[in-house]
Image 1: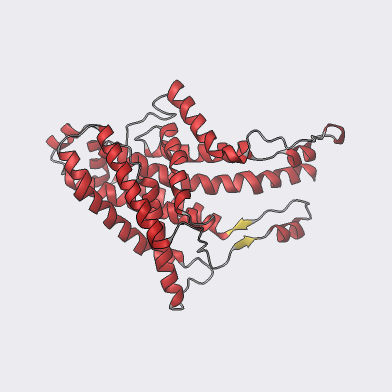
Image 2: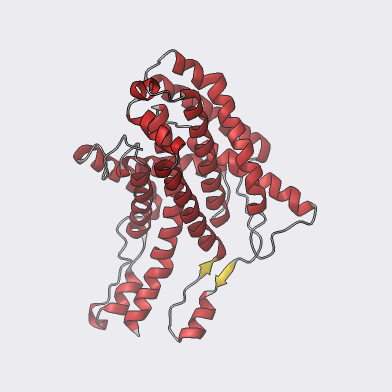
Length: 336
């Protein structure tokens, strides 16, 4: 029984949260890697683009709730998600048309694009804070738990409980569906193959008759969808706070580079690697070792590798190690 309790303990505090957080990072990292792979620059405004999309979803959720409209057991935010996606696409295309296209036509170097994206980051951050404020917002409604820890204990007779939130299941299912559609699109459709060709060799793609404006448009549409979905899922699972989305830029970039920047599949796996590293290294294993070790050897300390205060330092450390020993990432980068 002690062994089963130890497994449930890890499942409840590491595996389930790791899968959920990893799914959110994976969606964000794929968006970043698509921008780099196709448009050739690192978009530092991506975290605030996620925040903007989530903000629109929250505002639309409040509007639907004020009209007495809900989604039953599911969060009302899922009904508002399409509006959030459409407005985020509009904002992305607006900034591309008014800012990025100018520098793209001038053939500016990647550093220029990074500086420009930083400027857009500050603009989006200010817009979000002005409209919805800087404070925590919990917009989750509907049925919160699929299974509560107490119910699990009563069902199994174990000392440890397993709590499964509806947002965790929604996050996993949404990530599987979104990524399946995206990878099918990139690998099986004519437009997806054109994007890959454009990413691999822009000049050769242009000679083949591929329309660069269409590729750029589709890239921003996909990136905006991923940003809004990832931001909404993160906000539903935890809460919405604009500064948190800015902070999440580090683990998202770390996941992108660890997986191989420019490689969507690598970014997907990188998201889970970063998530499990952060959660696994900051978890206190004292109770776990009490279950699996003899009483005489039970630990008296927390058995915590790194304090939760330094969670983001883990992403940074992994990022540095990968850049030193495997600069192209676990998977070869620059390939869509």
